[in-house]
Picture 1 (cartoon, rainbow over the protein chains, first blue to last red):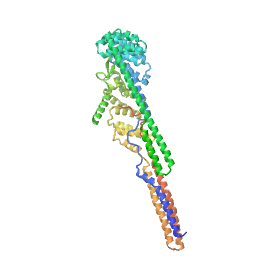
Picture 2 (cartoon, chains in turn yellow, orange):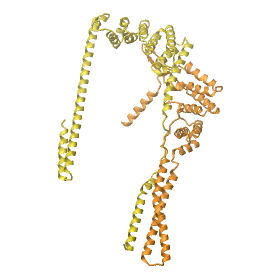
Picture 3 (tube, helix red, strand yellow):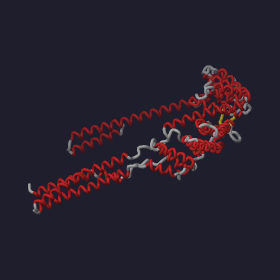
Length: 302
Length: 273
């Protein structure tokens, strides 16, 4: 090998070494241009432990507030608002399972409060007591208190409210008696209230006992009410029919969509098989694609 | 149209935020959620008891006291919600005293909780006292819990944007501490590349020179020795260049903070006010 050739070979080797080394510097050059990482602005997140603590504090605070409200009511027995407020607090507590379990003697304390409230101010005490017993899942006491409220406070709403809990504890006769007693007042009030009374009777009756249970209602009102029940039944049937039609349409649409998707995927698979058999034959590939296009356009008809 | 929607949404939000004046009871008149004047006796009693006990309570009792003071702002029953506005000024004053007392007795966390609650109840107005406590806490835990410290520093800055300690800590914990040294390594890599190329050029130049003209034997030996030296240095530098630069990238990337600001267990003292 001549000396010139040797020099040339060395130059080429050097150039390739430099090129290789320089090419490895592209990454570092980009890294220099990119600003270094920084924690994003913003206050940040509260930790899971903090979230749990806040949630637990909510329950504990409700329990403390309720306990204090019960104490305040006991300390001021003549203040009806404080008694009613304590009952309302118990209802709020009853909805919160975790807060409720923090007051061990809740039921006896509530009983003392409600007994005193009913004795001090039966109206509205009985309605408050009924709502509170229902919140504490005592349907029997709740329904009973509503019946008493209906009688002592002459409240149509209380008689209506008594139906659901008493029906659950199979004391429909008591509810029906209360509804019968308040009927004259309900009839004189707005028609919605009278209808609610009649609905209460219906809820506590079977198809056989309904007419008998409505015996305290004038016949023309009963006829009108039965017409109303029939209209409601028809409306309900119509709503159900519409819902069924909508459901079927939805199902048909889903099926059509699934069929179209399946068809398109089969077309794509066929095109793929076709092109793989063509190799590098351009015209063959084009035929495959056009057949695939025709295939896919046929899928829309599902 | 969009404006109308925004106004409606704002109106709805305001309406839903307002506490109810009374709560409905079936078959009975509604119950007023707040007394005609002042606070309900149990609410007042809680605040009275707390105010009296602050000066004499032990640190453990102060913690319990704080929980009692915050009951009205933590319980979401309609009666507590309705009395918050009326109780706010007194609660803020009590929380301030409680925070001061906790700070004086060295309980930084309890002081931060009390002052943070005061700040939240007060509507997030500027509070240098809270910012100072939070910044001190952040500084204390910066090495052990940087994510938590960053949260504290940023909350301190929110409470008082002029808090210098919190600002410095926020800047320090937010940035990449290896940014400049990493960059320096990358630049050193480039310098090595340039020097390596120069050395390799010198090798070529010496060889060309030797090929072009005849020289005395000792000079040829000297030139060849110089060529070998340049060759060794140049090759070494060309190998070192990417090693240095890539090492710099790795070093730089390893310095990027891998955390986001996260609250300690004790904060925020209150949920959404």
